[in-house]
Image (cartoon, chains in turn cyan, purple):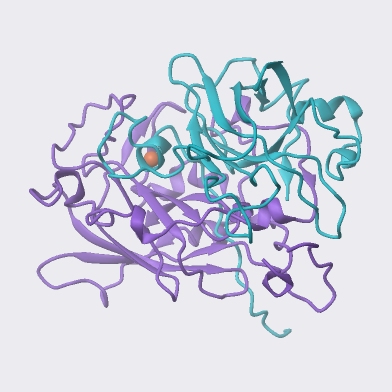
Length: 199
Length: 245
Ligand SMILES: [Fe+2]
C-alpha cells in the first residue's frame, strides 16, 4: 500500500440530453416565465465598446445533418482583451452567452462584440478568439472549441500553431460574409471535423 | 486581476473517468462523436476565467421544484424529496458561489418540453427546472419530487432510470460540466446505455445519490445526497504565471 492522495476525481459527464433547454433556456423549451431572469441571454449590453458582430452557423453531425437540439455557450473578453472582473473591463460586456440551434432550421446566431487579444500563460500573444462549449443529445461530454476570425492575424497564435494538419486550422476560423457578419459551422465528425480541445 | 490571483492552470481532465465520445449502445452518439483526437493544451485565461452569477438572478422559488411552477400556489404530484450536497474541486476544496441548475421529468416520467410526447400526462403544477447557488462552503439544496423512469427510442426497449440532470458552473469556463444524478437502488441504472457510457463502475457509482435519512424531514420529505466534483487548479511553486493578470 501507498499513501492516500488528498485529491478527488472529477464527476463523470453525462449527456445533456434532448431536454437541456428546460433547465438552461426555459423560454426556448416553451416554458417562458419559469424564471424571471434567464442567464446568458446576451454577452453584451447596449453601449458595449468595440465592433458589434453577428456569428451564424450550424452544428453538423457525421452525416452532414444539422442538429436541431444543440445548446452552445460562449465566453470571451471585451474589445480590449479584458475579461469581466479584471481591472478596467468594459462593464457592458458580461462575456457569456447561451444560445441554441433553431429547432426547425438548426441555425444559431451569436451577437456580440469582437473580442480583443489576450496573452496565453507564459506571455505569448494569442489571436482574438471566443471560447465555445457545445452540448446535445448524443454528446457524452461537452465539446470545447474556439472561434477565431478570418480578418485577424492568426499566424502567431500558439493554439492554432499546435495543430499539425494545416488544413484543419480553418475549422476554427469564422469566415467573414459581410460587414460585422461571420459564419462559423461546427462539424462533429467527418472529413471537415472541427478541432475540439482538451484544455 | 493581479499576480496573486493567478491560481495556476486547470488540472488536465482525466478523460478516463468520462464517457468516450463514441458508444455504439447509445445510438445518437454514433454520428455525433468526433473521430479525431482532442487537441490537449495547458489552460490559459480563456479557460480559467468564467462568468459569475449572483443571487440577484435567482427568484424566490427557484430552488423549490415542488412549488416553483405555480409560484407557491399548488404543489407538484410525486414523492417529495430534498436533494442536497456539495460542489468541491479536485483539491477537495469547496466551490462557493457555483451555479447549479437542474431539470427533470415529472413523477410520471414526462418532461415539460415541446418535443416530449410520451403519454404520461403533464402535471399542471410541475415545470421541471430549478437552480441555486452554492453557499460559502459549497453546499446546495433543492426541494423536488422524485422523477419517474421513462422509455426512450434507442434499442428495442430502453428505459432511463430515475434521474435529475445537473449543470454546474464553477469559477472557470474550463470547469463547465453537465451530468446526471441517479437514485440509490434503482435497478434501471445498470441497464441504461447512457449510464453505461461511464465505463468504470466505480465512477458511475459516484453519480448515484444515497438515501440520506439524516436530512429527511419526518412527515414531509425524504432526502438524497449528491456531491459534485469539478476540475481543480494546479498550484505548485514552479508554474508559469499569466502575464498581466
Ligand atoms: Fe432525462
